[in-house]
Length: 146
Image (cartoon, rainbow, N blue to C red; front, side, top):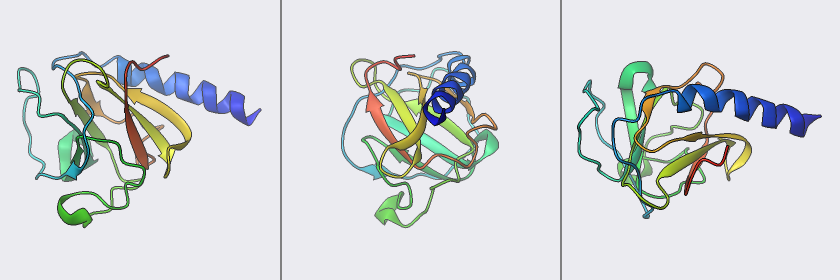
């Protein structure tokens, strides 16, 4: 029954993420995470920087972290790993490069465990309430596979 609920939840949450219009090209896999200051900006037409970005507040507000590679533990992100984004993300932007490993699968637990959903190439927006302040790790993937 738990497996069924997890699949049902993941499927239901995929719809809000996939409903966001793709306005950018998507992601490539690399290695380390980076951070930047969050600021209001229009994502349409922005050049890809190869990162999956998350912010602690809606509408890209508060602290942010950006990763060019996988991260199994969001408790340390940002420059020098000095910020904890575990269970704190409220908005996102997949600003990676087009091609293989362009989508990002996010997980509710550290170490890629628990329920998951996918952030498609070029997508962005506020994280749906079901996932708000719930994400703990991510991997770059080729295709969301729903």
